[in-house]
Image (cartoon, rainbow, N blue to C red):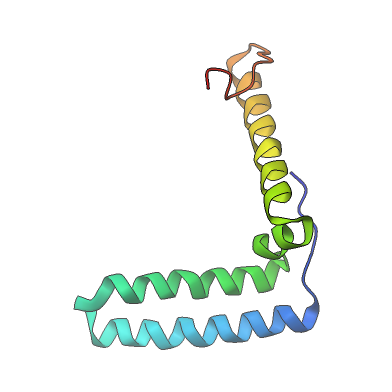
Length: 104
């Protein structure tokens, strides 16, 4: 799977800034109130994801929206299945050409 940059520099800078702001804010809240760990931890994960999207300049949601929600998602799932079946086929030594969802 080849990932191409699909967000601009300004968008990436906004994502990094907002992500780091939320990350630091909710990390500080987590330190002050550790018993509310679950809610804060979820927001911390989302903020870290925003920072990563800004650094890499790739957003999977934007990618799906540009390709069309249904068609883009189906296409990506097909690519992932093909990649997984190719990689596992090489590791096992057998070149199975079956798809992952034949029994369905």
